[in-house]
Amino acid sequence: MPTYDYPCVECGHRFEHFQNMSDALLETRPECGGKLRRLIGTGAAVIFKGSGFLLDRLSKLPAELRAQQALLRTRYAVRHQAV
Image 1 (cartoon, rainbow, N blue to C red):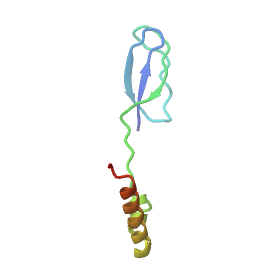
Image 2 (image 1 turned 180 degrees about the vertical axis):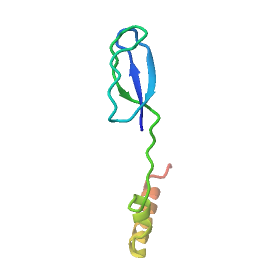
Image 3 (image 1 turned 90 degrees about the vertical axis):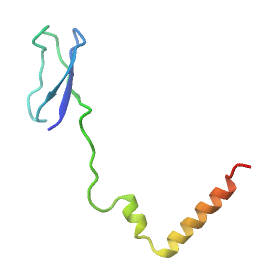
Image 4 (image 1 turned 60 degrees about the vertical axis):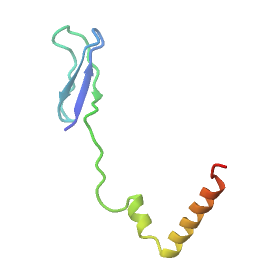
């Protein structure tokens, strides 16, 4: 369940509200009666699980390709070395 930020259009007050995505929007702020907008809060985090990410794929490359990549990195480093 995400945390939503609700800024009030009338007075500018901003608060967070924890609710399901399917829950009805909060429409008015009880204190001032102002109209609210719903924004996705900053409490969400992305969690990467499973295989298939870049590091997993690179570690499974054949040894010949890994050697070529290392050679290219070395050549690049030598060319762009500070003189």
